[in-house]
Amino acid sequence: MSVVGKTGEVAAPGAREYLTFRLDQEEYGIDILKVQEIRGYESPTRIANAPDFIKGVVNLRGTIVPIVDMRLKFNCTQAEYNSFTVVIVLNLRQRVVGIVVDSVSDVMELALENIRAAPDIESVIDNSCILGLGSVGERMLILLDIEKLMSGVDMGLVPIGE
Image (cartoon, rainbow, N blue to C red):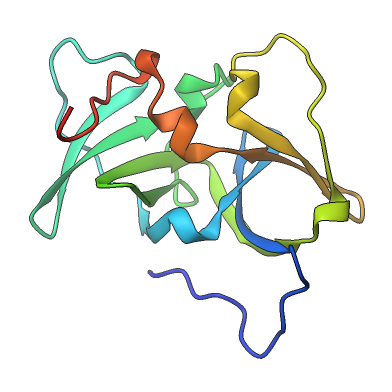
């Protein structure tokens, strides 16, 4: 299934759209422009000596795509595969990467005034990979710089051409 943006709505100046997804009890947002598609979870082919959170690779229409389980990467209490588990296929520079998440919520537009700086606390996510905290009504989103997160040295995903 492909991601379809909202139609007929005019974006506010400075507003950006984020694809929101759940990991355990938390809700995250990533820039919708980085998302290529959303797919159901299928077991990837394991790669020897890869970090635990890299589940393996899948062949996506002739492109070999590494699959990163974000639940394992972020030390979630459980990583259960069920009918809601999906893979968000990202297009990051010249690299295609899939991330496994518990479920996809929706596409949400956030104006700059609804985004606050993330608190400087120790967590499994490098603070430089958190763009901020977005709030819409009672919902709080952790906005990720997914490109920076996926290109971190600990990810083991070597950029193409380097």
